[in-house]
Amino acid sequence: MPPEQPAQLALGFFLAVLIAALAYRARSLSRSGAFAAALVGTVIFGIGGWRWAVLLLAFFISSSALSRAFKKRKRGLNEKFSKGSQRDAGQVFGNGGLATLFAGLSFFFPGEAWPWLAFAAALAAVNADTWATELGVLSPHPPRIMTNLNKVVEKGTSGGISLFGTLAALAGAGLIGILAGTLSPVTDSPLNGLSLTLWVTFAGLAGSLVDSFLGATVQAIYLCPACDKETERHPTHTCGTETALKRGFSWLDNDRVNFACALGGVAVVLFAFV
Image: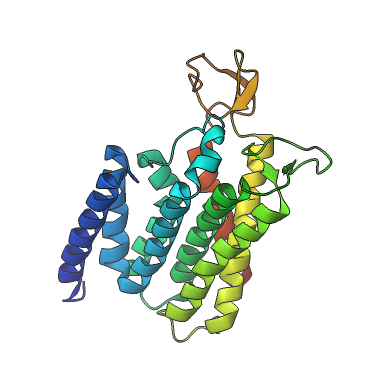
């Protein structure tokens, strides 16, 4: 272990706990989400360092801000989503677990490009998905289900896509891509600067499309018999009625689909460059 590593870990732990506590007070995180975020932040801040931390903070701050933005316009869609804007441990690990893994692996493979690539692609994918979800519902046009673009669905429906939402996903992936290309700690890789930015952005967009495909096909979607509406909420809908599985696998909830989204982004860059 490098002599400076214990101090960096201690600083990373302090900063992660501080940010998690502030996010908990701001109601961006639940209690379990705050503990999970402290763990994720400690690994990424403490092992990866400040460059890795900047990408994590860009995702967390932008996604939290978008979750709160236009709240009144999105209030009627809460019944669609499995959880609210206050992220719990499942959401934290679903969105940040894979990125945390690659930040940890960077300790064992110092100076190699692939941990940074995979880390950035994972965050680009979940950021793209979050921006698409939070901004896509503001589109003036209803979305269409990904597996049948002729079929119009309600806003907030899992697997629904729109041009507005896709552009939002591209912007979300692009934010992480720009930071990844600008702050890359790897100096001896042919993939740097603009090329790294473009590939991470592409990987992030691809990961968000994986999320949409799973949402349209195998993610657990329930039906509220009282409201006759599809929802991700289970065991009860916002009205208090017990929901019944309509399609998909009951174990494949939104948190696991988010993890698959990140995995899709990682797969793109690793297959292309490793």
